[in-house]
Structures are given as structure tokens and as C-alpha cells.
Picture 1: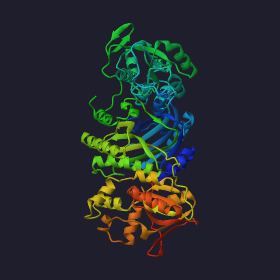
Picture 2: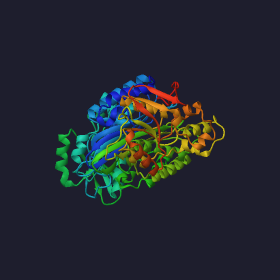
Picture 3: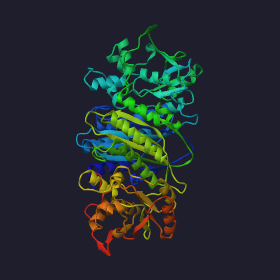
Picture 4: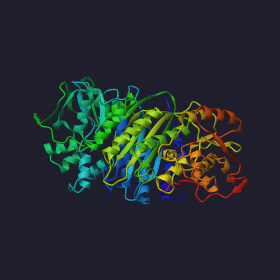
Length: 318
Length: 318
């Protein structure tokens, strides 16, 4: 067997060294687990939808792993393994670079490849990738989106908008800008240890994948409360500030672009000190950016005054 | 949100009623498990590769679930849940029929939908589906592909070749034939209870997805032994016998076409009675079709004589 598919499977086999993977030679992986909660997530990336056709294959692999690790981080979970679904496109060089990036990501996130499927796609079909991540839920239970209460603070674990600016640079919609912005788009850095440390402190938690505003609204809707976001308090990076003025427009862009993969969470005010300690211990930069309200509304403020919601809160399905 | 993607997610939410699914409103599913082995598998189906563009959407959904249940059956596992990865193609009617078929399959296999991802695909892209199945390993441990020993019997749990004939009918390569042949291709029936009952009796087990001969060779290769298949002993259905002569060609076709999703396993000769009892108790039709050999060869016999291997043993990747 020297086909492309076999070559890719052979390359994957080299990195699937965990005993549960059974050398990728079996119908399924068999993973021993202790009793407790398992956290399961599956996210897909499609060429031309979730990544650009000329994004390097190793960064696509990184992103595939990272977006799923971000979901585990939001549940405070410890990764146990991943399964990949790989619809082949392109050529062997793309595959090789993809496997390199996959191996790199799995090593950095310290999670084993347990199995999956590799299939040929019809000619011309976009590269279509799926990844299932399995994690162990924290002992306190995995935080949900629906636990926020009126009076809770709304927090975010790091700066917003870098990935959106990086995409704008890659698409030629923005000139200049530091390489770190493109890196934020291509190689997001979910913070698993921070998610684990926060799990027992938060009332609700999610990751920012579709945009801060839409993800905040989803927490409020799931929790049956309202939310008020102080747009001034939303943290922006120095790199973003070098290419954008600190304006309302910049902040709307940063909070609706998505792809940030920071943690968005709510917690009772008496948790502030513990959250700040956990954040600085795990390399986060947690900031309070608003609060949960008893009404079911969604309010934005800017420079001390109420401002209307933008027409678009983030990436909506479809 | 009234987009197609949202409509599909809403429809999926109606069938994701297990508490672990968290109403598909969270970043991840949270599944409580007892300590023990978990069996994990992920198989993909791509339009034009694994199913025909005009296969009914409900049968595609059935097949997506069934091929993954077949992997669990081969490990003797009890299904705990599934996650779907759904690359949208076609139109809303297709989606609706797909969800109907998915709900039907999940009900029949008694397995909850826990989560997944639904993404838009670029125009013209083939429908691309993935499914991750999670199961509980049997207490005796999940059989592997690599446990066969010289002297073991080689068994198959049901007739071969119906699905291949069904595909030939659907592609217009074969005239006539009972509807049951097309059903075998479109709606395979993996036998989970039989897999569970066999787990403690077998030395190695796999499902027949790519063709009996290639799957038998994979067991032998993984186990470091050889295998001899009596082609006369391979069970063929009455439906197949109505459209094909009982010839060498028919048997080669039936054992290389794949998509049968019956169980292929090896076991010590002293297990014969127990295997036959388990098979008849669980609606199987287990037949001994050969044995494992000390040499590492792959031998076929037909009407008492050795015969050469065909050029192609089954579906090879790529």
C-alpha cells in the first residue's frame, strides 16, 4: 500500500503511540478511564470556510486541535485523547506538513492521538477535517453555559480581536500589523490549565469562538439572565493597538470577529481575588468586563454611556 | 436564526434529549462513566465515495450510525453515545430526511446523540459526514485484531456479498435482484448484542467493512499468523443466490466487495459450541470458514483444492 491515504495513515501511526490507540490498526481505540465525568467535543474545519486555502497545513492542524482543546478548557477538562476525521484534499506535501503540525499540537497540548478515519474526497472537494476530543471533567463538575446569576461578574481571560485582525491581514483587508496577529488567527492558544483552575470558581464558562458579544449573549440566554458589557473594559493587545485606534469601531470589531479562543465566564463577586490569582498563576490576563443582570436584556456601555447593540454580534451559523 | 444550519441544529436538538448532551447548547457534552475501558471510534462517509449522490438521506444517516456501531460491535462494546460532524450540502429537504434517519438509527441502536458540529460547506462540495461513537468496553476487555493464534478457527457471523450486490444494482451493473440486497448496502445491520456475547469467546475480532479477504488478512498480519479460508464455507444469502450462480467468481466478489458489517473473528476450537449458542441466541448465523495457520501465508481453497489469491482482496485505502 503506497497510496496517499496509506502514506498519511502511516504518518499518523508514527504519532499514535499511546497504547489506547492500538497502533491505529484496530477498529476502535480502547481507553481505560477512572469513574467520573467525561467531556466530549467535536469541531470541524473546512477549507474556504474555517481556514484559507493558502493557510499553511501545519497551522491548519494546529487550529484543528486548538479549537477542540478550547472547548475542553471551557469545561475545565483535562484532555485524555483525540480522534481525527480527515477528508483528503490537496497533495502529499500538504498531508506531510499537516501531520507535522498535528504532532506538534498534540505534543504541546500533551494529548494522545487515539484513532479516527482517513478518507479520499472527490476531486476538487475542499479539505474537510474533524476532530473529537475526549477529556476528564473536573471533580467539581464541568461548568455549563447556563449557571450565570444576576449580580455575577462577567470575565474574559485574555485580549480580544487579535485573531480577527490577523484574518483581515491575511485577506488583504488590513495593511501592516505584527506577525503576532496572524499567529493569533492561525495558531490560537487555548489555556487548559487556566480552565481547570477556574472550573470550581465560575458559575458559567464558555470559550470565545464566534465573537465575545454573541458568546456572552449565549451564556445569558442559557442562564435566563441579562448581561451588561462595558466595552471600555474589554482587553485589547498592544499588537492590535499598534494598527488600530482605540475607538468604538475597533472594539466592536474585536468583540464580534471571533476565533479568539479565550475563556468567557461569570462568577460571584466574592470570587474576584481567587480568579485573579488563578489567572496570573496560569499565564492568563483575566479582566472583568461587565456583569449579569436580573432583566433579560443585553446592554453595552462605552465611556460611561449606554450605546446601541451592533447589527451583528458575531459569527452566526449559516 | 432561521438559517439552514440553525434549522438543522434545532432538529438535532429535538433528538439530543440525553442529559449529557446539555441540549446541544454547550461547548461540549459531559457524560458520566463508570470506571473501565472506553471504546472510541470515528468513521466518515463522503458523498460520491461512500454513498451515492441519489441514496436517500435517511439511509445515509442510518449508514453513518451503523458503520460506527459495527466498530463498537467488533469490540464487544455497549454504545454510550455519539457525536456527529455534519458538513452541509444539498438542501433543507435533504437535511430533514437525514435527521429523520438519524433519529431512527439512534432509537434502534439505543444510543444518545451527545453533540457534534454542523458546518457550512462551500458550494458544490460533497456532503461530508463524520460520526464518533463512544462505547463501554466489555468486562473481559475489548477484543483486538491481534490476538489470533495458529490453530484457531476463523468465523464469520453472517452472509457476505449482499451489500456488494446491492451497490451493483444501484449502479446499474446488475439487473433485477431483491430489494433486500439494496437494503443490505444502504442499511447495514451490525449486531451489537452478538458482539457483546462473543467478546469473551474470541481471540481476535473485527468487522467486515472493506471485504472479508482483506479484513481476514489484516487479522492475520496483526496477529503474526497465517490464515486459510475455505471459500466453499463462506455463507451466501438466498437473496444473492437468486441472482448469482454459486461460482468461484461469485464468491470472490462476495468476499472482496466489503460493506457487509458482519463480524469476523477467530477463536480456539474448544469454543465452537459456545459460539454457536451465542450466535443463535442473538440472531447471528455464525459459520466457520477457515483457520489460522502457523506459517504467515494467506491460503484460499475451493472444492477441496488450493486456488490462487485474487489480485484484489478488498477495498484498499486510496
